[in-house]
Image 1 (cartoon, rainbow, N blue to C red):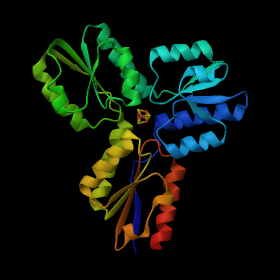
Image 2 (image 1 turned 180 degrees about the vertical axis):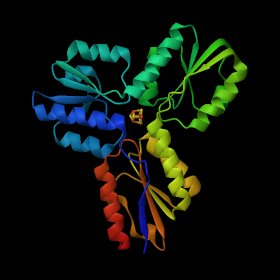
Image 3 (image 1 turned 30 degrees about the horizontal axis):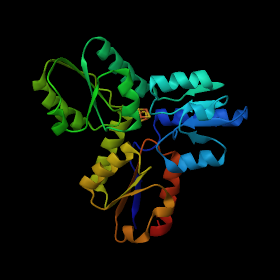
Length: 280
Ligand code: SF4
């Protein structure tokens, strides 16, 4: 009979739990309309569930004028936040404190005259919200891109919270020869590295791995990559309804991990569904 194991660290992290509690509390008050600026977290199912309960995602603070607006976990550019505070009746800041640390570090380095390099994925909301804190900052997503960064006397590095440590090491290795002084502030979130280590450990022992989380979630996609490197039969799903019985045929150990924006209820639903499919 197949054994179903959940990674020792998986699912909703501190920042996501905090954001969900804030939105739940705001919705329960029933004191006017509640919106989130962009999707609150990168989990379409949670976002759809919130929408059903009347909490919708808006594209700009202008769409939430006079109402309650939650700033999402990935952070908000300073100008946009200022606009929200000007227009909205109430602004609740659900930015994860670890993301705020990235903003602070980038701002401090820029103020001290460092050319700021943000290691991460260009276009990701967290990176986009970080850039305005350090005017002139550049985004580097690979060692190859690091080789194209112009030389500078003083260079300061911050990292997207969900980036891989290996990427940071590769980029820093390249930048060492491009600056007289290189300062690195490691802003990778421990929740992310803990999830990654636990996923790798489990994937080494599993015949099949299920990775739960939004397809647009950077940290979930990274977990799926790490898992697939150790266990080729890795499947990334957003919910229990995507599971297929043939994935588990002949499997001895079935591993489950989940991204930082996946609530415990979704992990439990997947575990139960796998149990039904394999008769465990
Ligand atoms: Fe915050 Fe880390 Fe969770 Fe991102 S993964 S929301 S940085 S606790």
